Image (cartoon, rainbow, N blue to C red):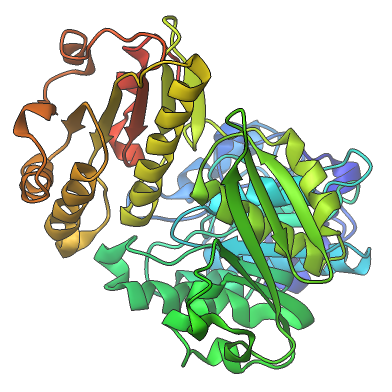
Length: 495
């Protein structure tokens, strides 16, 4: 957490950045704030409380409580009865932008750098990997707490970027058109990454092209001379994008295990002066998986904690971004030895019986689901190699992919078809799109006897799930709103 000595924001700065007018008890302009809060539940003494309004709440109703808890002032958009100083603006949500810009300018003046990243899948894992790559002298960059990646969470993350911190790595999430314009205009960065583009938030963004259009706005705010880091595939999917006509920034592209016969991916197809980091994921004797890569002048090698091509791509993006900021590839790879997945994101846990649970239930969309199927199949083979025996059971506990709009039935049918190509012994499915998933599964020649719907409370799965033994692998994958951590507990694991 940030304290008043490291935060840096005073009343005069707030007035300049937000054009606020004062009401109530006066404060000197040099009065410091210990931080900024939009929620009285985590407000600490001497903070600035910002009263936001949403569809189901109004922060102005909590101004009194904020002062009772020690707020030094409140930023509001209308007068309220209060015992403390009020700073009144036209729109408190827009005022967040000004406060965030003030922090960024201050940290830039101190020589610190900012990296931003977005994408349909892989944002948080790439963020964590990049924080390791950019770690120096035992100090990790400042980054988002929890899921603070939206129009409220990003400013809150910036407010906690203290003078004692190093660089910052910010994950940026969007849900609807306009979100990225609001956020990216704040986030002038030294480097920016788009991890992937696929079907996600289609109920608001409309199409995969709409996803790219919205997310790529973040790249427009990279400072001249800064770096844009992307999977090479995005260049070939969206070659007409204005992003690729940019000449004031440096491009870093990554690709994993390219097809040597694919001539379209040659160096002449990329913007002049681009750097391409090509990676290869291979299994060595003894079952170890090694990710290696090269840009030509530099190369690296990293022993992967899990045989996942998705994790490999995230690592390539993190290493390329670190390289753009002056970290050698091998030095960055050495830092990755400390990588540990976050809860619910490509996390591996053992059951009391020795079976392996693959927990990836924090989020789900078609892109990440395909990667999860590939991941679990490779891990299943690895488990058989380690036990020097026949493969055990490969099971899946799946939940609906949410926020896909009118494309949901089609995309769940496609998910079922892909699941039929994966050697699952059984699939347990929880959610409203079971019938669509079942239709796709059967069309892919999946055996109906292997498909089991889950209904009722989570405890109802206790008698449905088979007894696990060492060598068995269980993938648990679904959107956060499906709460599949409840099913994970039935296997004796806290997710």
